[in-house]
Amino acid sequence: MADTTHTKVLIIGSGPAGYTAGVYASRAMLEPILVQGIEPGGQLTTTTEVENYPGFTEVQGPELMVKMEEHARAMGCQIVSDIITDLDLSKRPFTAKGDSGNTITADAVILATGARAKWLGLPSEEAFKGFGVSACATCDGFFYRGQEIVVIGGGNTAVEEALFLTNFASKVTLIHRRDELRAEKILIDRLMKNPKIEPLWHHVLEEVVGDDNPKGVTGVKVKHVETGAISEIPCAGVFVAIGHAPASELVKDTLKLHNGGYVAVKPGGTETSVPGVFAAGDLTDHKYRQAVTSAGMGCMAALDAERWLAEQDD
Image 1: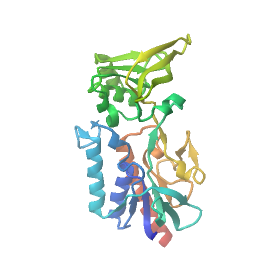
Image 2: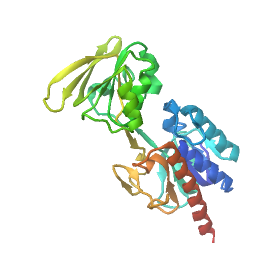
Image 3: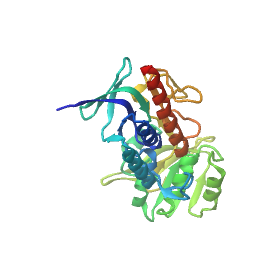
Image 4: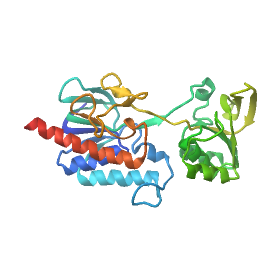
């Protein structure tokens, strides 16, 4: 039988922003409920080494998220394994319905649903997803030991994925539409020095080629952006690493969005266009997109929610 629960603060999402909001809201005695969502721990659970989180010279992404979850629980945050499928922000208390059938009402809501991998939208890409086409090197790199693979993209995501994949693959071809990368200089330096990585400039992915029985990738067709010439590269795996899009589907019709779907917040704060609803992390941040900035915004959201709730009681 479905349950209905009420909380002062409902936190939706379980990355660095969500768990940090859980820590701060718990310390403020707000007894928050955090709903983990489709990917508990967020994007860091699909990352290997994290070298830029203060306090850890190096930590595995999943390990860091386990520690954050444990911290939030220890502070008293109630953590629920569910996915919010409907969120009514038209009246207070706000109402969230879960995939489980359970309902949570809340005086305030903190959105921390993060971002998800972008895809190119090619029919052949869709056809081979999970059968040689992936957006997560740390999830699937292991399957390509000693094989040749390609990575699509030119930013931090693509360079990080290419570097990680050299742990398994015999060769990594990085395909980029321009002739220079948009990644951080330290990452570019590492990539250029790696003998296993070969950049292919001025090309875009045209088609993923493969077999149906058994289903799997055998290569890619790429197009030169200037000449239009098509060439084929043999490979066993294709990793699409063209960035991420904010997971704002839940609120796209109720909150003000900007920059292609990111939730707009008050400058220097976390207040959204609906009073009592706050947003933090990659859902709002199209500029920095770092674990530490997400955690900082989670802290801000909890403090903003605490102050807002106190004002309602006055």
